[in-house]
Length: 206
Length: 206
Length: 206
Image 1 (cartoon, rainbow over the protein chains, first blue to last red):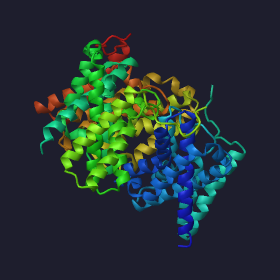
Image 2: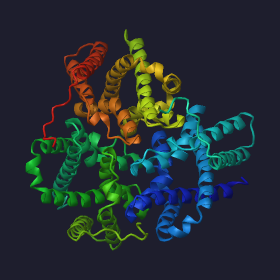
Image 3: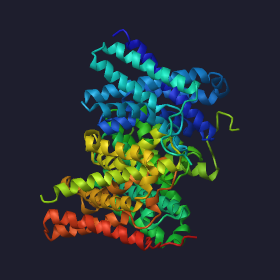
Image 4: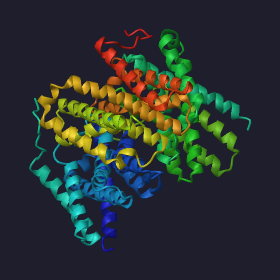
């Protein structure tokens, strides 16, 4: 259990970054403060909510988790008050976001494993947990979801998920497996952004 | 129980107004009659459906409530046949809509209280119940949701919800508390529209 | 049970066609391969997922159905690799899609009947099962849903559903009723497309 505190801190930082990203997108579209707060929530808890709905984990998690709500509220209100200052920390926020991507993927996969879904479904659920908050954010803001168009994002989740199952197969210590996979997803995301990698298109984009 | 009949009438009028609003938005986008009917349904039952999904109240309410379905169908078909005439009653419809906003907020809060959620979550659920039908309507019609951009709407729900918890704390009679809070939300909404009040933006809208 | 194999084949062909339609729409918007796969999934399983969420059939069906996931994955990847070739089979795909529309309507209605919903609700659930994958596809791609604007599509579901209940009333053999209604929906859809039929607008489309 050496990593419980570590995972908990990542969860808060990840939630915070997801919420800030939602708030910033909302401010760019000039939403009013209520809209900014909703977008922060949707981005941070949308993926987990969709997962909970689909697997029947009801009431959905965030309704029972004060920490998430408080973190998101602070992130949203802070984003409005300190927009300019936060913009100086985009790199930091990006790093938290990438850590959150890794963590939420593994959290989703773990929940799916407990329900004994097949490997493919578990990885799908992990990816949904980590990516679909951003999808709902984009839908609400009337954009085609970024994750369907941009550099490797969901793909980092999928690769990390596959490696996690590999580690389980070779019976690596669970805590080690988790931390390594989170860091792997984090690293893939960093490299993808640094080198502007996208998925190769198998079809002709006319 | 002096107010059961009163609340029932508000529910039908509120559902009717929400449905008419959905139908009118759909007609403006020139949807075909099937689309108009769906938009009327989504607007009227979307918020309650999202609430039911998230708290695990399944099957969701409208599947078991003939009155809502019939009211919405009449509103949708009536909107198509008597569009011009209904437009003369926009003020009346607005008043029903504002009453519905109040009622659905309190209905949602009551359901959340029974499930023993925290105060913040209860108010969030009340607000979702009252406002998110309109959000789904706007998403389906490819608009950025009005409620994120316009005069105080969801904020009226939130204030009404806060006052409702205050009344519970001082142990005001439950029926009185309900009616007062519905009328409070109604009044806030009226004042907001009359004076074109919006939320103050804490951030710079460039 | 003479038709079990027949229904099973239709289900696979229908799922395949729905997935190809999702993939093609995604490729037209130049999504990356991950986006194309997600759109294929959403189009093929979106309607059934929404139905399962609303009636409380959790975890939702596709999480427990490998056949659907595999069919959709093949359809999505095939669409990207063999786009040009598949385009020569649009008529074939359209026929599968129309068969799928019929089948998924009846599947949805059957599930609703088992839960003893009213006739109107059963038909609504059948229509949602068959049509709302396309609605979610369109929302994700930032389009106003086609089904709200185009030739008779959902209306074919509704008519087929009404006839199905008529057949139940006169106690027609259940298998016969199913097959006839699937073919009826199929036929309505074909005729609607061939003669470019739309619903008559009851209101003035200015």
